[in-house]
Image (tube, rainbow, N blue to C red):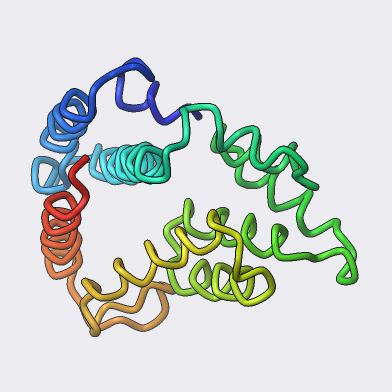
Length: 193
C-alpha cells in the first residue's frame, strides 16, 4: 500500500504535514487507548502499518527519493515486480517471487529486497542480516548502505531484553509498548521528518 495513502497525505505534503498526520494517527491508534478492548488487535496492526508508512516516507525523503522511486527501484532492477509488491504491502506475493529465484540468481538486490520484506513484517533481526549481506555483496550501493545504516541506528535504541524474533521474551506487553514508544520518540527527534 502507498505510504502516503496510509497517512492520508499527498506525496507533495511538507515534512511537517507528514509528521503531523503521523502523530494524529499514532495518538488515535496507540495500544494504550485499546486496553481491554476487543479492537486492540486491529489497533495494533494499524499502528504497525502507520509506523511502516512513516518510516518509508522519511527514508525516501532522507535519501532524496520521490514517492514513486522505490517502486521503480534502480533503473536496471532485476526485480521490479517484487519492489512493486513490497511498496503495495503485498509481502506474501513478494516473498513468493523471491523464493522462486534459484540460489545462483540471488544477488545483492535479492538480499536487499528480502530484507525489506522482513523489515515490513517487523522482523528486524532477520531484516538486518539480509541488509548486511546485500551491503557486503555490493558495498558501493547507496540504497543498501542507507538501509543498513538505518537498521544500525534502530538497533542502538532497541531494548536488549526485547527479542524481535518473537520467541521466548520475558517482557510484558507494557514493556514492549513503552520501548517502542520511547524509540519512536527518539527516532522522530533524530529524523527531522
